[in-house]
Amino acid sequence: MEDHRQVVRRQFRKQAHRFEGKGLTLSSQEYLQWMADNLDLQPHFDVLDVAAGTGLLSRAMAPHVARVVALDLTPEMLLQGRSQAKHDGLTNIVFVQGLAEDLPYPNDSFNRVVSRFSIHHFEDPQIQVKEMVRVCRPGGKVAIIDLVSPDDGTLAATYNRLERLRDPSHTRALLAGELRSVMQTAGLEIVHTVSREVEVNVTRWMDLTAPGPKMWRTILEELTEELKGGRITGMRPFMRDNELMFIQTWVIVVGVKR
Ligand SMILES: C[S@@+](CC[C@H](N)C(=O)[O-])C[C@H]1O[C@@H](n2cnc3c(N)ncnc32)[C@H](O)[C@@H]1O
Image (cartoon, rainbow, N blue to C red; front, side, top):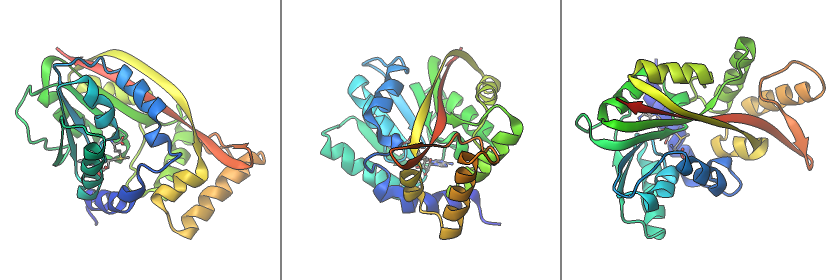
């Protein structure tokens, strides 16, 4: 069986050059600002961004802290990030290739450890979250930002199946409560949770991962079926200006390492 990391690498090697494309919710400055505002950053902080990709969040945080380490498994994502940081004149970010499950840092190294949109790519996120807590300083905070599944179990299964058809490196978006439990089990005291509903353009969302035509068709058929009153997918599809859209729920959960 293919190692899940290989699936991730292949997927993000493919996405790297279009990851920051116009009109994607991922690169929305409004959402990035909202995230940075919820991380309680201070100018002297050392921050680790785990599974940082091209460092979109790293770059949003960099002006507010002393240093950001952007760590990711996929070199092509890091390459894009490095060149964008240079273009933006940001000199306090370092891009490092590494694994979220085996962070190359001693215990208690960072004031903040953050990770955005990574949990739903891990097979057992407890492992990576525990590792994030290990490298966070006592009194420091770990913040996880991710999409979450609908609370209803059947809808959550359909929702995740469609996400996996679009991107085979997607494992499962947790329920908001599950995410909090994973963080608590890893030793964090949850101090802050916020969420927002994010409208996603289906064509742009699929263009990023470029699934095969069969996957495209299945996803479109199921969403269109729901619009016509058919089976509910958990994606909450709707039409706006003749474009098919759906709604994701994004959460930010912040915990303190005591
Ligand atoms: C959806 S992207 C998010 C990138 C970035 N955090 C952001 O929000 O813009 C997921 C990233 O997780 C990385 N990733 C997935 N599994 C990983 C692992 N086990 N260790 C390190 N990085 C990983 C992928 O290479 C990819 O860049």
